[in-house]
Image (tube, rainbow over all chains, first blue to last red; front, top):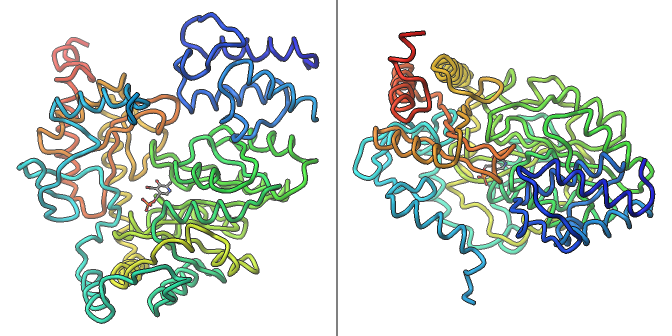
Length: 83
Length: 405
Ligand SMILES: Cc1ncc(COP(=O)(O)O)c(C=O)c1O
């Protein structure tokens, strides 16, 4: 089970690469909706993957506040640390 | 930047549909002739997409009840239950619903949408957890957003996935409330309710079932999927609507949970909107009576559902996983769905287009719904149009191609 912050970033980026129809450059600054063209349901589906890979719960209101991949990494790190 | 610039991409799509003269989201119904026919853009059209499951919209007893109540009590209540009071009809309908479901409490809302908003937002408080099926209707998601609980999604119709998410939450304080639907409105599939009920018991959670599309459709007496699956004691709250099988408008919730009366002063979508007019209430009560007294309607509906499903399946359309009054054909793209929908309408058949994010799995759907009021000949006529236009649109192999196989 990935525990440190770099691992968490890798899990998130990896899950996203698998979810995207075509390869795109990904960084902490990438906007999940605008840059990647994912709709709200696709984002929630992808977060469900992350929940499973990291064994955490990510409530929807926290996803709503996420704009960039960096935001998502930070949110997930915080949730993982709080466990 | 203009106010609506944020919707620019969507506005462009909408404009293109309007320009093509075929916008499935803004269809002019010039006249409605019966539960199964209307005049649309000047053309007599067979209705195969109006969720009028029992065909009760023109039922003489229902119309007469609405007429009498309107004459006696007026066209509207002009306010909410907490401000302008409860009319006899409101209380009577709530008792009738509670009696139908054999539950202690019944509560009526002004729409089915508001029933979900009002129940889901009020049941789950700040430290509680809502667990929603990923394919839940917009009203369930919106109800979750209106409340203050932590909201978690689980994979559609997967009791194992629900269990693993509840397991993750097992040390968290607060109540766990699971929300599922009877029949899902997009693909017409049903929830594995027995298995969900077992998970609910194992984790000590509460279970809410939205029977919007299954009331009057499933179950020995038409109560819905919970009745059909034999798990009614495990379902803590049933939510539903009057707008489909009951041919009117309004929503409801029934429960046996003690103290549920408090919802009347904590559920904002119940408190801060006008109550249903007497005519609407009387019509819903009369339609519920018809639903109970005429099980033959349910049988006809389900025969029609199977007839359409098998017919389209035989033609080679890819459909939802099981026959139900909602029959959706999976289209290769949104444009294919728009094109097929427009061709069917032009040929005198009204259906629906459903697109992501409202649909599961990013699917574009050509959605139909059948009614007990359809004759077998009308269903066959619809299947014939699906065949002819499906081939013309390249959605089905052409006759020539079939012949050489
Ligand atoms: C599953 C589900 N729940 C609730 C609703 C809302 O019901 P209403 O249209 O009566 O507000 C609908 C349909 O619109 C629905 O499909």
